[in-house]
Image (cartoon, rainbow, N blue to C red; front, side):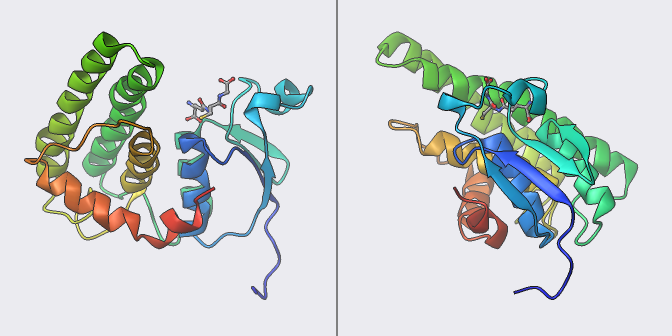
Length: 206
Ligand SMILES: N[C@@H](CCC(=O)N[C@@H](CS)C(=O)NCC(=O)O)C(=O)O
């Protein structure tokens, strides 16, 4: 029980959505209280487009101001509620963080979507698995190992990059038949184990 006024924050979310979970994870990381409004995306309210211009979750209202797009919402929250900081101060590190956040939302997101859409089509599944394998190797060698020695993406300090990828890996790996992470991705595997026990990751689960 917190002895403090609840901030004026409403989050429109969906339990199974990895984008919305990122915002739940950011709020948990900063220990911010908020009102959670669960939207059933398979049976969405008729007025949902009035709430969410793209018809998607997450959407966050802060003091009546509407924000959408998970990465943008999260950077906003990080500026308004700076403790603990989730974006690095250093301009170069900040740019690198955004490059990899973007990689997650383009390359990795597309590859895992391709896998989820393949259904029982063996040819499509094999193609998606091959693309995902390339992603995992790229993340290991061009991402994590270049940025730091770990255990988090940026080193000793947990950051927005950990949030960005954690919910996506979790969503992908919960898919039946999801492929194993290649053995050589030792840095990635260590990080996945670390995330599995991370407090805000657990608190943000549906
Ligand atoms: N780029 C958006 C993507 C959000 C998104 O695609 N959310 C999905 C659920 S995981 C959604 O609301 N889909 C509903 C739809 O597209 O109709 C973000 O980062 O917030």
